[in-house]
Structure formats: C-alpha cells, structure tokens
Image (cartoon, rainbow, N blue to C red; front, side):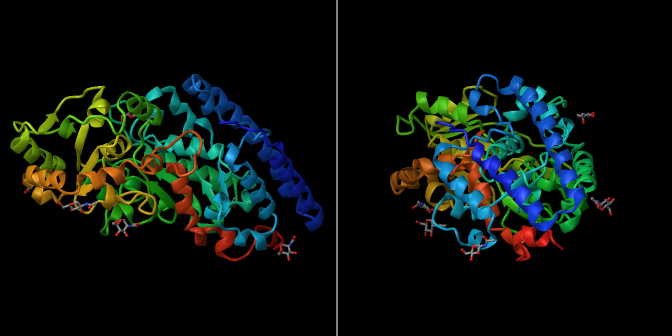
Length: 466
Ligand SMILES: *[C@@H]1O[C@H](CO)[C@@H](O)[C@H](O)[C@H]1NC(C)=O
Ligand SMILES: *[C@@H]1O[C@H](CO)[C@@H](O)[C@H](O)[C@H]1NC(C)=O
Ligand SMILES: *[C@@H]1O[C@H](CO)[C@@H](O)[C@H](O)[C@H]1NC(C)=O
Ligand SMILES: *[C@@H]1O[C@H](CO)[C@@H](O)[C@H](O)[C@H]1NC(C)=O
Ligand SMILES: *[C@@H]1O[C@H](CO)[C@@H](O)[C@H](O)[C@H]1NC(C)=O
Ligand SMILES: *[C@@H]1O[C@H](CO)[C@@H](O)[C@H](O)[C@H]1NC(C)=O
C-alpha cells in the first residue's frame, strides 16, 4: 500500500490553533499547556518508536508515524483532509455522509501518551503483542496511525487510554497474571486526571479502555471471583472494549461497552490460508483441539466448560467423524483449515479464540456457549455463517452436524467464505477498511452522545470560550 506523506494535515492543525488563539484571545495557560504537551508527545513517541523497533523491526508497516509526518492509507487520504476541513466547522461536520469519514461520522480520538511502564515496556516480551488478549496492543497501534486520531484533545470525541494489562506471563501455566490490572489502571487514571482536564470534565464517560481478558472489566479469569470483585468504580462510567459478552444481565458487562473479537495474528492466518486455501479440500469432518478434562474438578463450585467439553470427549473421542485432540500443537491452524466443522465450546468464559480462527480459515464454527454475545453483529451475520448448539444438546452433536451436512452446509460455507467476515475479525497494525479496529471505530461512532463536544451539542470552539 502506498503511504503518501500528508504534512498538510498537521500544518492545518497548527494553523488552526493559531487562528483560534488570535480570534479568541485564548488564555495563556492553554498555549503553555500546548507547548508542554507537544514536547511530551515528542518524547513519548520517540520512546515508543525506540521500544517498538525491537518488537516490530521485521515489518516496516508496523512502525508508528511521528508527529510531523502523519501517513494516511492511500484510499483514506482525501477523506482525511476533508475530515480536517470539516472539523473546523461544527455545522458541516454533522452533515458528512456516504463515505468512510461519513460512516465513521468524522469521529475523532485523542490517544493519551502514557509513560511506557503502562504499555510499551511490556512489549519486551514478544508474546505480549501476539497472544489472544493482544487486542489491547493492536488497537492502540492502529489508532496511532489512524485518520481518526487527533492531536488536539479539545476537539476529540473520545479519549483512548492505552494500558496493557494482559502481558505479565509470569504464571506457571503461561497465562497472564492480571492481578495488577486494577492498580495499573487506577494509577493511569490518577495521572491523566491530574495532568489533563478531560477526565474530570465528564467523569471519564468519553474515555475508552480495552479489557480483553476473560471477564472483561472485572479483571479475573474465574466468574465467581470476577463477579465478587466487580468492575472497579473508576471504570464504571467509561467505555470498555471487551471480549466478554453475554445476552443477559451480567455484572461484568454492566458498563458502556463494545464487544471485540479476541486477537489472532493476521500474519499467521495469512500464512495458513496460503498453504490451505479456504475452498480447498476439507478432510476432517469435526475438529476440536484443546483442554478437555475427562474428570473435571469442581473449582469453587464450577466445572471447567460447565462439563461441555467432558461430554464431547466421552461421547465422541472414539467416533471416526470427530478429530478431537487434547494436547497443544503449534500447527493447529492447518487442522482448522482442513476441517468442515470446528467446535467452539465455552471454557471458563463463553468466548474463545477458536471462533475467530474458524471464521478466518473457513471452518464452520459450531458455537456451544449458551447466551454468548458475538462481536460486530452489524458486520458479521453470525446466524448465516455459524451453527449454535445448546449446551444441553451437546451429546447430539453427531446427528446435528450430519443433518446440516446433508442440507444447508454449502449455503453456510458460501456465506462464511465471504472475505469480509475474516477482515472484520482481524486486527491489523494499521486500520484497514472493515477490519476489527475499523469496526470498533464504527461502533464508537454510534456512541457519539457520550462525546463531550457533540453530546452536549456545543462545539469545542464555542465551549473553550466559556
Ligand atoms: C460553517 O458552515 C456553515 C454551512 O456551510 C456556514 O454557514 C458557516 O458560515 C460556517 N462557519 C464557519 C465558522 O466557517
Ligand atoms: C506479574 O505477576 C506476578 C504473579 O502474579 C506478580 O508477582 C508480579 O508482581 C507481576 N509483575 C508486575 C510487574 O506486575
Ligand atoms: C480532577 O479531580 C481530582 C479529584 O477531585 C483532583 O485531584 C484533580 O486535581 C482534578 N484534576 C484537574 C486537572 O483539575
Ligand atoms: C462443588 O463443590 C461445592 C463444595 O466445594 C459444592 O457445594 C457444590 O455443590 C459443587 N458443585 C457442583 C456443581 O457439584
Ligand atoms: C442475517 O441473516 C439472516 C438470514 O439471512 C437475516 O434474516 C437477518 O436479517 C440477517 N441479520 C442481519 C443483522 O443482517
Ligand atoms: C442450517 O440448518 C440448521 C438446522 O439444521 C439451522 O439451525 C441453521 O440456522 C441453518 N443455517 C442456515 C444459514 O441456513
């Protein structure tokens, strides 16, 4: 993709700032704030560039841009300049329609530059940006180069707070320890609410966080403990991008939220698809690989997967139509690509990375997780591309899947293999039209009533005069 330089965007910003200063006689403290703020951005961005170089140095696309040279993806560049123009006129801004900028309603997001101990320091562990909770890293990176990013917090609709909480892989089983999530987030909020005026202005209701772990903003992998801990008070009025979602009331989603897919590396999917084309031969009828306890332990009143995986194993492990494996295998994506049906049963939480991998690799997801809420329903028509089997019917899986294979399988596959589904569920280092970060932006654009500038009906320019 060609990446034309667009210095005009930033020049526009500074010109506009100067105009505003002249016109409004802006208070001295605010221009001081900007001088300081510019310097902080430079410094943090340099740190970020330096830090991320070691993580992403084999892929030039990953490099974030510097402040003075904003790169905008080719197809979006004209839209971006239009967005800039329109942002100087609140009346026009409301009217844009029918193109990408209009579809995202000229959304503007300010990304806080937090000290690296909140985010980029964690990237020293390479797994941090690749594992299933890594959307917290991917969304941050994509926003840094996105055309919705604004460097002027006064015109922002939303404020993104980039804290990576899932990157401490110090536990024995290799899963992240998220015990520090609350304190790290609390400290980040303490920092931004003292150094900037925006948090206090709205109590954080236009601030956006990622909580990609099992029970979202409850920050615990076990449901009881997650519910007992609850969503920390300081996050309750904010907007949470989370993988956890159910279609009934649950304390861990009792917050304004956008449901996001778990992170799967788009590069790994691409490599698999090159070797195993989506429309190629599928010689495995039903596939599942993962933890399947034969005698599940009652852990504080709960059984892993509510015993669903145990039933599957007991009933079908000897069935030749079922290819069920209980051990880790690095090449499992090729197995998905060779399979017709891929089981996506709940684990401790209802969601699973298998859902994204199945869709991306063209294997019909068989969702077994009662009440699960699925990401981006306006972009991915889940009922057309997947099957849902009730937890209580899991012992009838064989018959159910045989029936589908004999009736509407080819319809489902045809729907599933539409590349827009794969695109919608994968996060890239740069926002691509229709990709997962783009879908997040689209959903945020439906929440503009939370924007201080727009929700109140007062433009940033008018407001700063008061
Ligand atoms: C904004 O746009 C409206 C509609 O085109 C126009 O009437 C108004 O004068 C513009 N305001 C400014 C400040 O440019
Ligand atoms: C990482 O997790 C371990 C185990 O919970 C904890 O002891 C350690 O303090 C954590 N590290 C950081 C930097 O939070
Ligand atoms: C925001 O409110 C907190 C708590 O009342 C206060 O400590 C802090 O100084 C305020 N921040 C700003 C920028 O005024
Ligand atoms: C799990 O064990 C607890 C006691 O530790 C017991 O009260 C509970 O009924 C058990 N749950 C199930 C589903 O068997
Ligand atoms: C999804 O597809 C079904 C069946 O074609 C259709 O009835 C439904 O309206 C679609 N849902 C959305 C959100 O497009
Ligand atoms: C396919 O058939 C099954 C029942 O056998 C039904 O549950 C499912 O909704 C159908 N899917 C489509 C896309 O027609």
